[in-house]
Amino acid sequence: MITRKELIKKYIEFFKSKGHKEIPNSSLIPENDPTVLFTTAGMHPLVPFLLGQKHSQGKRLVNVQRCIRTGDINEVGDTTHHTFFEMLGNWSLGDYFKKEAIEYSFEFLTKVLKIQKEKLAVTIFAGESKMAPADFEAKEIWRNLGIPENKIEPLGKEGNWWGPAGDTGLCGPDTEMFYWRSKKPVPEKLNPNYSTLATEGRKWEEEKQKWGEEDSNWVEIWNDVLMQYNKDKKGNYNEAKQKNIDTGMGVERTVTILNGLEDNYLADMWQPLIKQIEKLSGKKYTFAKGDLGFKEMPECWIDDMRLMRIIADHIKAAVFIIADGVVPSNTEQGYVLRRLIRKAVRYAKKLGIPKDSDLITPLVKEILKIYSDYNILKDNKQRIIDEINKEEDKFELTLEKGIRKIKKMSHEINVNEEISGKKAFLLYQSYGFPIEMTREIALESGVDVDIKSFNKELKAHQSLSRTSSAGKFKSGLADNSEQTAKLHTATHLLNQALREVLKDPKIYQRGSNITPERLRFDFNFDRKLADQEKKKIEDWVNDKIKKDHPVKCEEMPVDEAKKKGAQGIFDDKYKDKVKVYSIGKEGKEVSKEICAGPHVDSLGELGKFKIKKEESSSSGVRRIKGVLE
Image (cartoon, rainbow, N blue to C red):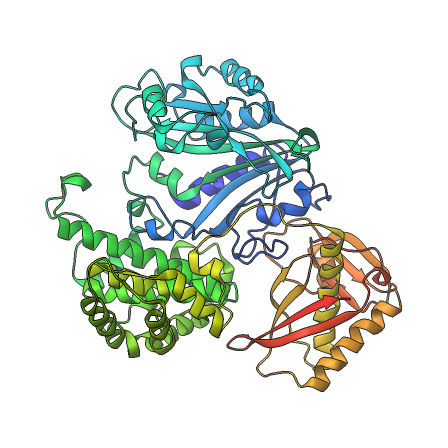
């Protein structure tokens, strides 16, 4: 059996032996990417460096990154989908490329993880007109490593192409590795799930004919993204000046596969949570005889297992999100967090866990044991427990009333009718029910909710992030335009201005989101700012801009950065150097921060700073929205 920690250790050590430097496991809240609410992949913290900025640790990097994905949140509860997960990744920033990346992947799988070569198959990019030719180079590399041609499948852009994130930018083919997890003889060809595959001009029925009957014993284990091209505004795909490698291997999936398990929740990063939920509910996760496959289990057992998985998944995700400074609210990350906690609470009740049971504390303790390598969890243990319990208590007060109200609404309408958006919005206001939960409960009674009219009601009353409500989070490379660089530099000034004007050195950044139009900056503070205070903050920032202070970047060891008073989160995984941005003359700096985002060379480029809005973000956290005029 291989454990989570063993897999991570093997991976990091292998790539270190290939000249890679380990980089920190970054926050779940992206610092420099306004297109996402959460870090959804290991590449997000590396956006500026994939675009050409020099990384302080060099051109070869490796880490394990904590991630949150909510796009398929409604599928959580099966054996494979998770809201929180860890992603192993190695990167080349303009250093080695296709040949070395594929050879490293093959060596790690066959030499370190001891996977038989015969149990591997791969896919490559098949080529598409007006884009790029077939990736014969990757095919030849795999053949030279001993993968037979019948196990190298070419796929179109839906199967083996990454990016660009927007209309233009970095993109390229990828090559995916599949593992035959069954004890049955390995088939002659790769037959993955055809519904995930597509080639140019093919219809799904044609896909079925091409691939034959799908075989779930072929499971994807690794993906190498080969950032080879740059798509321009005219739609042309040009060879990129800096070619990068971005790989991804999911920890949960890989541990499950290597241990021969059919269910991710039987792996070591889930079992302690499942056992606690069994203890609290008095129900079993597996069928009593323990010898039947999942599809043969009675419906009641399957339902209980699904509920247990969702509770374990949602509480784990909530723990990590709170550790990164988010608290439940009705906007953006806070809304996602609230939705996760409330769904877990509702499903705990459905599973039969008594109302007066302490659901949260024992689960949080197990999560801290599983992830003892995350100091951020240990340091925030009590705050995590308090925030989840507070949200649970708040929801418990209205849960029963809200459920009765929804069921009554469902019975009052005719078949094929929907609960109106207006009524759903009243539930949201009165009982704190996320719209997704109202819809779930309504569907249990055979009726749906008018989501469109709900969103109209919502928009008319308050500003709720429709992105987080729908669970649709785009991923990709952030905007690194000149204007974004200006606004990013302005956040450094704002951060220091808050400490100076409010005379509180303990104020620090709790979140940031920057678009080319505006900056948004969250900071810890327990009251509304007075108009006079906002004016003083603006004046402080604009005074520094008028003086046209230089912006200087230095690479230095972490200890030196601390001694020089640099602001920032000092992660214990920083082994070598960090980038420190200083504003002002040496010895008289007005700001000094550890940062990796885009910056201007001098403050005179910024223009005039203006606070457009100051408001509450969550309990104990204020938010400023500002622009440069």
